[in-house]
Image (tube, rainbow, N blue to C red; front, side, top):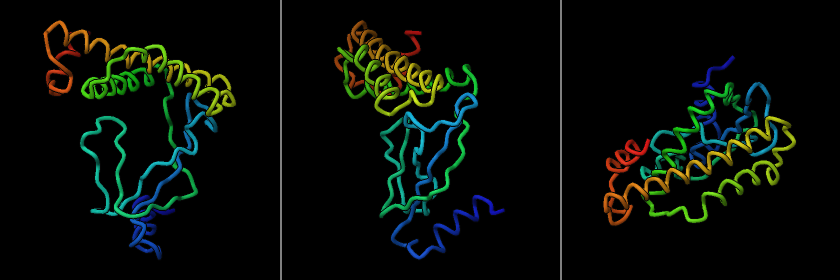
Length: 191
């Protein structure tokens, strides 16, 4: 059996298109609470996992869900990478709370005020996940994922609202002038 390092070496350096195609996306097959997901967006869920050194970079402004940018075209592999997504409620809640806090900071620093987002975002993400991406075909797990996405969209925008509320109490003029350290301090003071 080949190791991941050998597979990466073979695809990136020994394939005929290795110079013009410096990276490969791999589909990810996710297991959520012991069930393999086929609908709702998590499959095939392509991610760039193989890239030649010096042929990609990250946008340092992105704090969450960073995506590498390749210099050149990309290739796609067929066989999926097995991903054991959340296997317990505690694991899911801990990870999601970290992500929604970071995303809330990003929205706040971009000057986004959650006027209608509190309700609209949660309805949008729930509906998108369950109906448009056919999460209902994954049964109760698809419903659970849709509910979690909708709930955390609400919590994320609620956190943005709390950042703005904290800034207005301190007399700060706008989120664009607030540095990351003060954003973290505002967040800590609201919990």
